[in-house]
Amino acid sequence: MDADRRIAALDEVPEDSTLLVTLRPVDPDSVAEGEGDVGADDDGGVEAEAILLRLDDGVSAFRNYCQHWTDVRLDKDEGAFVRNGEVFCQKHGATFEGESGYCNFGPCEGAVLEDVDVTVADGAVYLADDAYEFVRRGPSRRDADAGDSRIDFTGN
Image (cartoon, rainbow, N blue to C red):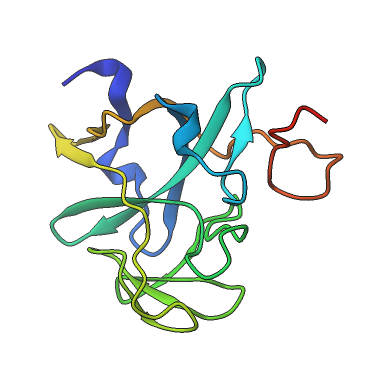
């Protein structure tokens, strides 16, 4: 596997929480301004977050925003709440199935988290989604003075 696409060792992905990583979309226009996991790198390029979730038979990954209110991050830098293989939105209690991202309870029931393709090989997790480049573990960079978790695409 390509070392540039290695995200983490498999044992670094928690069993009862999530691992937060930052990705760079290959096509910056594919990321919407209102998605809460969006930030900017030092050069003003768009960053997006993904959460990695440990499953019995591997790892799944999803973009780090709720389908009900897309400006709400599921993992706010401390790991998302996970119970019985389901990810919870702590804002309004929606639950998402860990394998599929399907919302089986809450105000966005029936919606599906945006998945990010990952693979496990030789005890490590690799980014397999050609729409993204791996940047680092941890959150995307946000303007702390803005008071919210979105970047301003208008340049203001």
